[in-house]
Image (cartoon, rainbow, N blue to C red; front, side):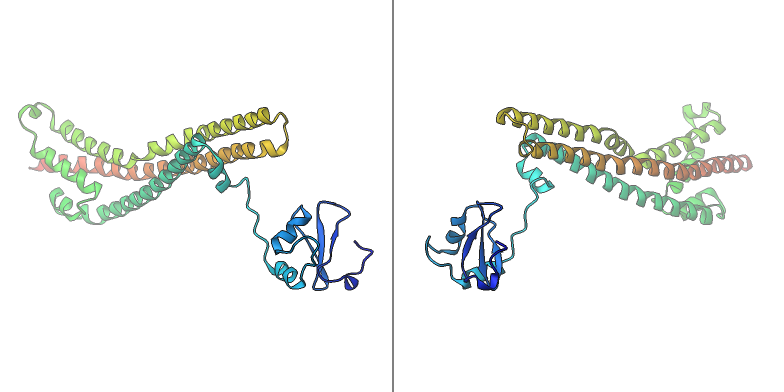
Length: 289
């Protein structure tokens, strides 16, 4: 091809390439346009020119101006979804649900812990400066856990009768406050078990998808009778993507779980401290009355 100067070639001339006889090059607009179609006759068919006729330079120039179609990735997520069977799609859906649930719980728990911190500051400012425990409880937000604990303590001092009267007042108030603190703790811990579950099992769900992809690769090898890369690349790529997705779901869930647990510990330390102080105040109030 290099022995022929492009300026001396007639427009529309096609020449078989020496490096690949199945491909041709065409000359137009003072330069070579390489035919990406393996069959030489396919270019004429695409341009609507019969065999033996000269290819018009205008058609060649128009074909050269057309942008080449972006090659689709045969091993991407879209190809994985379109080419996978029901089992692989089920694994992907399970991992997607786990991931969305983890991020949702993380966002909700962050908001809850932020509110708990605001309620703690409110209790420190309004509750301890009140004249009585009942007045302090009324000054707090109705959704505050500190208001719930204070109200439970006040009710314990008023309902210490009947069979409950056999329990010492000190123990009865302590039991009532402790039940309230435990209930707040249960609410703060809600959703964390889901994060722990996702962090524990999502790698194994991805591993199941990996095993399933390897199974497909072995099946393709058995059907074709040869371990060529084009036969195993798709299933093996599917298997690797499943592993990566499983890890991508598990790692954020584990990090979120550990981070939320540490923040919950700080919140519950404030709640337990409030309950302990409330217990002492209630005993002193009852003793004075």
